[in-house]
Image (cartoon, protein in one colour):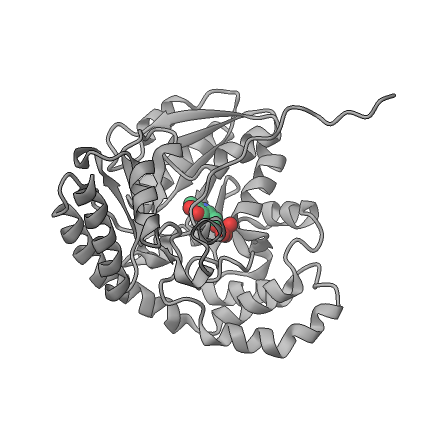
Length: 371
Ligand SMILES: Cc1ncc(COP(=O)(O)O)c(C=O)c1O
């Protein structure tokens, strides 16, 4: 039989943070691209990570701990739950795919658009069907719409809090009501809290403590974003013991490398690093919102996260054109036209240090003035 390669590819999601393509295009080093398109800690990695990687690189001659036990114990202690309620995976993204494979498969999953694109891609990968519930404005996801869409075919619901790309933050009580409505109908809720540590009061919004008590709630938390190490692929899930046992049994072996485990554990040794970023974002976000609203034709949305979504329709440039113009000045921004539920006039900017924010604002003003 002749060999054939399947024609149909799997859905791919577009991401921010592609400093590699930007540096190739500009013919400069990645260090010369100022990345406002991925929403990670603007302070970069804590020094504890570099030290631990240097001290441990020779251990790369061993396979990683299959159970990632010491990292799971460390995370559990850090967030105040038991280690049987924590699983680690190849980034939050790896855990989203694992969840879709185990819990959605050929069923339907509700997605509160606009939101992170990997929920859709993961659901489709395993033959499932995404059901989009679009926000009526961009200030909050449409939770009533989500409840109305909970038919017998629906297996899961993805919620992102605070939401990417809108930056809206939903009170814990509202999400719990949704979790209860889902529970009555046998639906699992994945609550992606990847950005929660950048909000002003993470502990009043997180549902980690609820996840260990409820069978239908799985909370996903990031290591890459709060600790500024997206090149290290680790994220974690918090859920009931039963759900965690299933995840641990089913993931691809060694999907979190030994050096990933070392780096993540070292990052957790410096919680003050996240606190410093939170304070920086708290003071820089109002500055960015104010300055952006003064750019001709820009309308930034209120945000509770470490990034801002901006409607740029009035400036006469589309988001992709604005991205190109900013990139010429070595500033990488997120063109949001690939988000379901947004048109070609939205860009997303992360919040960074004052000097970097001013550099970005200057690049955007120049791009607008030129048009
Ligand atoms: C909502 C959300 N979850 C998860 C991720 C990816 O996290 P990780 O780097 O842990 O895979 C992103 C990245 O942009 C995101 O926006």
